[in-house]
Image (cartoon, rainbow, N blue to C red; front, side, top):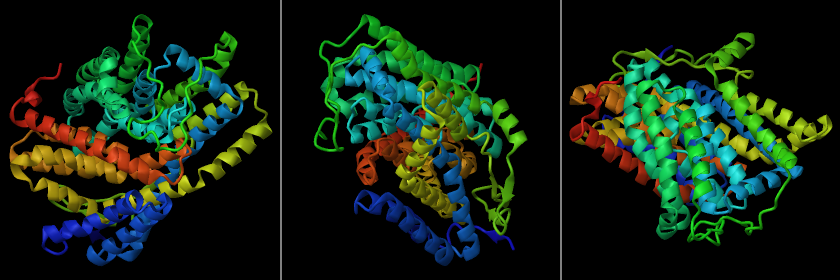
Length: 553
């Protein structure tokens, strides 16, 4: 029996919207204000979502349960699998001392904490976003920052803020490719439009990052380095997205930005060195921050051994992200399991889609092609390079699993919540509330993308969820469909820092367990402020600067 989604079950959009918001509000209040542990807050949010879906929206209880289960499986693979294996590599690097050597080598480039943030959180993180996405950049950069002595709040929060501008082209362009494929956008045109929106924020975010860390005055002390970092990322981002395509935007921009900053630091250093590892104004927050230590010189052989596991990680993650490689692994083994009682039994309805459209629910166990598997293989190779015995590797893996067990449970529950809201249509009710804003739609349509990522944890999922609605609404209002499709993705990137999944990844990478609420409270302002700026920029594009009329070369 097919169940059709209803987006206004009470024939009153105000009441329906308030009900649809209950699960998200329950989870965020429990996590951010009541200081409830993340897995319990996620469970409360999931229970609330089940109650709303079944009692208010009329979703069959069996379907609701299976939708939550389907989301939980997605939480384990690919998201949880990435977290587990990146923490595994980090643990082994710390245990044998090579992480300390890596720390010293980075300090050798610069011992200024602000410049380390630019290099690691922004440049290095953007590379991993482009190569893998799905939580990998936050897991890697937050782990490195905590190893460098940053406080847990600084390492977590700043990694999340930095992981914004690259997200729309993450995982080799997956979000925009999915947007075009699922909703019929022209891939090159919508890619180019995103490439006319995000470069401004690629320039802004490094300044914002350092201001958030050290304050305005300290930011101005290193403005030349920030400008080099932002421009050398933004310009390639614009050029590649407008004239080549979406797949390599982040990787090329990140490599250019990283190289430009390192070369610039050979000829320029700030007059004063910022050594505090804590957020300005939060010196007593975020647990214990390690004091700055004198840089220790290491031999070339020691440096090579320390960096080798991370170079191996970068290579493996990049290779695993290539579509031909994924296709090859999937051809070997990638069993697909349609969720009986859910698959093709729910229909999305107009105005979200032009015609009733069935929702697929097929769980693919793509273990070989999963990014987390590439990370695991690289970690094992790296462990052998670090001279670990096989028995030591196994013991370390078991210890890592025990360390992150609650984080994995939280991710499962969070993805169960997000998937249930998608299948029940409650998230679409929230989207429709934004769509009814008339002339203000360019602004609120951008925020629709923001809330989509905040709820699902994925720019790709937000594009699947709201990409069709953006197209329909834009055409009804006489706006460019490509502009609003791009705005969904560009606005969504600012929701990445407050989605529960990313926050759990950050808290796990820094081993700052049960402080997810502290991280959420810190990054929330930055998220909404940046999302509103994207909305204003899109509004200017729509009514003042019609860049969407430009021809792509």
